[in-house]
Amino acid sequence: MASEAAKEGANRPRLSLHVPEPRSRPGDTADFSYLDLPPAGAQPRPDEACSAAATYPLCNDLIRVLGEDNRTHGPWNPQLSPDAMRQILRQMALVRAFDNRMYRAQRQGKTSFYLKCTGEEATSVAATHALDFEDMIFPSYRQQGCLIAREYPLVEMINQIFSNRADRLMGRQLPILYSARAVNFFTISGNLATQLPQATGFAMASAIRGDCKLAAAWVGEGSTAEGDFHCALTFAAVYNAPTIFNVVNNQWAISSFSGIAGAERATFAARAIGYGIAGLRVDGNDALAVYAAERWAADRARSNHGPTLIEFFTYRVEGHSTSDDPSVYRPAQEGKDWPLGDPIERLRDHLFEIGEWSIEAHEAMDAELDAQVRAASRAAEANGILGHGLHQPDRTMFEDVFETMPWHLKEQSEQAVRERSVKWPD
Image (cartoon, rainbow, N blue to C red):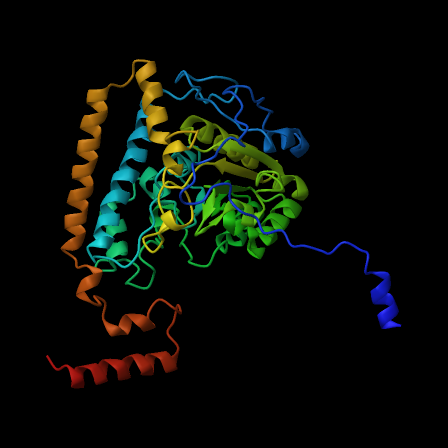
């Protein structure tokens, strides 16, 4: 009978497996002809209290404010003052100066690992400006701009990167996995997307208490394939949790392009449709559009109209990390050919256009920021660098785990101190 069944299926077409492939590989010319980039200002701006369904056309559009003429267009223009725009520009430039200095520090052996966010600065800096300071940020590992936008001291960030004796995390975290409770910046986890259920939980707790604090979470487009992403959105949708899910679609995870996470089938913003929540797709290299979308989502959540999923459509110019070589999987010129440009240059050119900035002011700012980062790096180096070995006493491995240390850990801690004093007497 089995052989007869096999014969019956012999004329059926064979199944095949589709494996997504990027349009260009090393040696090819970068190809962005497939992108449909609408003009700035053409996208409608629904009221923050609208039904989630009213936003669904925007999940397949692209919210833009800054046009090719370096002027603002359309209803999403947040009408920021020149001072506010200059502050965002300055902080984006500071993020880039910081990244460049820390990248060199890693190459010099002062730390083990670093991640740059070149080209993505607006997705963290401008978005953070749209939030209240009390709103809790649940970052992924490329949101150093959130810390800088909340004016967290650079020296403290570098102490954590160097894992030195002044590191508030006492050398327990990977260098770029910051934690900064003072500025409502949740501890970064190396496990992808774990921050999303935590963000939803925080938002639900805030609603239960009758508080007014939102949760804003960031995640890369590749990590939306993690189960935690779907768990977080399910709970946020069911309980109308005041959460903003910022998906930074920079086109590449480490060595694999966005199609592996589903970009060939639909936009990442369109995932909001399946959960019945609001969704927006935004030009992530347009700082004003990023600000406007994040503020819209924050106002919506604060008015008890539920969560929003925002896809920031941007590009990762650098490698995934200092342990990644992008030249082996993408064209060398792809970053320069990215059609949405550079977020710093675009905001700078807008300020030029309206007469609120100049080449001389910009060059002076860059020099000042470079000196600021240099000074912070020197101050942190005085506390030690990773290449000098461990900087924290052995006993710290037992601390900060339990509110009250259990008896068996206390005994182990005391034993470790005794044994160390015997092996390495003063």
